[in-house]
Length: 461
Image (tube, rainbow, N blue to C red; front, side, top):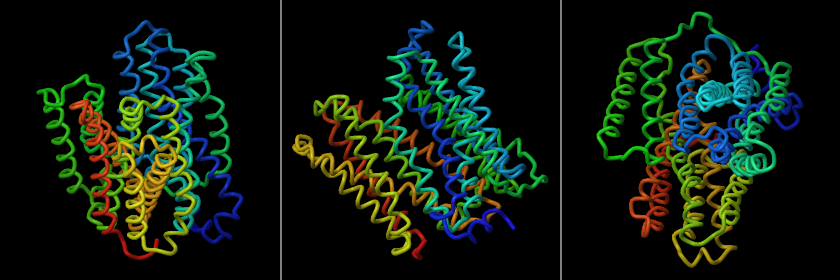
């Protein structure tokens, strides 16, 4: 009997001690890439001094890490089918551990960039394999409740990560940003070895090398182009930018055509023929676009337009994170009472209500109102993202779990990259008057979420 079936026969998620051990195991693992990606930005000035390098050159440390994590996604999906989820998860932890040690001992900017690429590979494996590992361990019936617990770091770490990094850089050395990963990684490896169940594997699954190269190159080109635009290294209307757009769309378009002709492509695009999957995927993409673009642009609006201190702007983001954290504990109750479509639309409307104070200048002087707005906005987005991530798995065959997880990660990456670069460009385009337009654009995209939300499965999750 598969592990997922065994666990659904047990007395339930809340009372199952082994499930709590699995949750702790995955939380420790997923903290690593989240903490690393949020903390490193704070350490860039210290790295610049340590290696006598420009900030622009150090941007490669961030960009290539993101590209390495992205191109690992389809490879990880194949690995989970060919071997098993536990082995792939352990591989990700070990790679991340070794790369962290190497980064801490890097003697030059080039060696740091190289080691960060390997660290990005480890991060990509962890981010993609987490959901299939959890689904295999707890079963579909308990998956949503388990995800609400495992997803807690995704809310807390982006807020606490920069604070931890700032303390480390000011108190000791930038090296400790990487050294901190070592005890966490070792503990996570020990727990994974002891508590994670093995999943089934298919040794006949062959690596689709041509499909992988097509999709990975297309995805890498998109991520690179968007990162260059968002960092202002590339003019969005330049020939180079347009060339990257054409190249990336051509590669991904050809991969879609190629994958439809293959029985076992590295990533199955036929999943998008399933209407609930397609609508949920669109909602995940749009909610990721709103979430990450807000995380990127709202601090600038608070500080530059309305005179908030850095601490005050951080507190507003903290209120949003707290709203997301609190709302996720109610998701299972809501989906047991209302249809998935209704819960999705409720989350969109809550997020829109929370956005309204941001459109009114006088609201920025009313701290309680602004905090309430950010709480509601975070609650709506928190519900929306968690609902979409778990709902994606409801209508796909069990053998397609790795593909589903890969598409979930890719849509989140693309939503974040497109949202961050486009909202940043929009804001800089007419900075003196773009505050209301920028927030208005976020509200419009949030409103667009109602289209896929209203088309989700009407039955209760």
